Length: 352
Image (cartoon, rainbow, N blue to C red; front, side):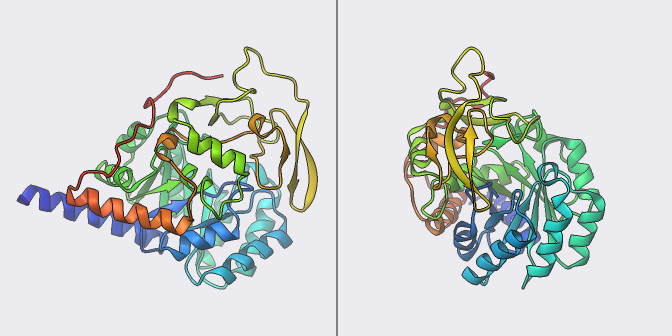
């Protein structure tokens, strides 16, 4: 190994260690907090394997937040994260953070989708917890760092789910100039992809789609099977699943809602359970299909990113994390990948 190669390897390992330290975990990989999908079982399995698992709180009230955090804590002794969405939770946000501080039996990571209010960020930090903020623009990245975030997630348009900006990851990383580590979100599904992100200047990755298809995920089985069967070319960015969460474009699997010239009517297509209450799902709802959904699953919002083509099976979350670590080490050592795969086009322009 040449001196240049040795130096690059040392630099990559230092970036990974810095990213992991910012999160309080062994390995700089974060499981995304996907509403309805990321429950205590998934979060605990990921954290137990040495990465950062995240339980999604979505619009949960104080009692539910306390229950979810307590359930996750009973399943793992490791650090885990809780995902809050300030723009969706609205007035509930303060109540949710009250519950987080009340229920925590260890240092947690508040994973905020978008910038949290400054006062709430200060409360989380003052209580001794870590702050991870997801952003989609350079300006929001600077604002997140100014809030005291331990790390910032740069979400590119390659990512599945709702988007915080309209730039691909390479542009966001090139523009990033903050001191705190930057994690990337978008199309990273294996250890080789994580290594590529670290070489480009990141300190880790936040991944969602690859954890949708885990055994512990609360995604509907039909949703899991559709992700496994799809490629990146089977996804697109649309605004057709905006009921309940307007104003954010989102990357999803193509289906009957996206593939019509005009948006189809918002008629009832399914039923699901939200916070213990059985609720109807209209066509165009932002709700993802969970195990409790019944009806036209393929017409619901099946969020998926451009890395979908590299996901080939449903497997335990701990095995996914272990595979990431093994592939990362192998790629760093220069070993060829076991199975070459294509994720589809890098930045498809089609929008519906």
